[in-house]
Image (cartoon, rainbow, N blue to C red; front, side):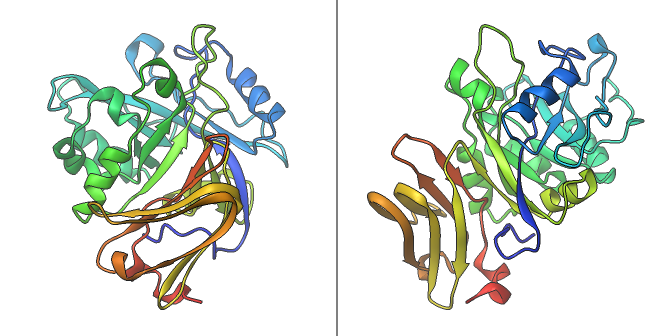
Length: 308
């Protein structure tokens, strides 16, 4: 996996890949969700209703509203028991086929994740902090998982458990390779503000579901709550980050490995790559208003052909 979108052909498309409609516990219809995100100038949205019997195991197909400037991805949020803490946890699947069979009561999380991966869907662990996912839980599934949600807007605001970097950093430090993403978990309910707060920019050759899904599974995107990363360049000796004006540009890696630059109006920072040669790094950009952007973990041994 090369979690490195900046050298790829195509353009960046903005989208939210975690939302719930009236097909499960959301307030808006699928068409209403599409209109809400289109009005905010997003390029795509995935509707991921809860895949449980109470709602008839929906895989919301939102193809009808697709246009040349906005598209939709079908998906679902699935639930299974087996967390170390004894609670249910969740899996997100984007691009899930409409005939995907519901899980049996005795089906394990490992089996469900493998079945999801076998369909070619983009499979992810959403809101790990909210569920209480620990390292050993993640290790059971990481072989079938494409990504980990590292910012969940809804659970950031309703429980302060919207982050997922603790799990992603732990698994990356252990040598596992995957991508990471920010999302809303939008329900559009009046008692929680859970929309338009976290998204991904996917580098794809076109705005069609197949192209977006292919790019997402390859890790060709970065995450944002409002900040922008213009480029990350790997040279023989440096990692160079270019952004819109920011107050902080940082790299974080295994353990306490980190480098950072702070100041007003930063648009470029160059770091030594030696510290991250044997592991990974991820880029963090912080704006003056607190908005952030992140790359997924990047492994320098996968970027040899990208060096300037």
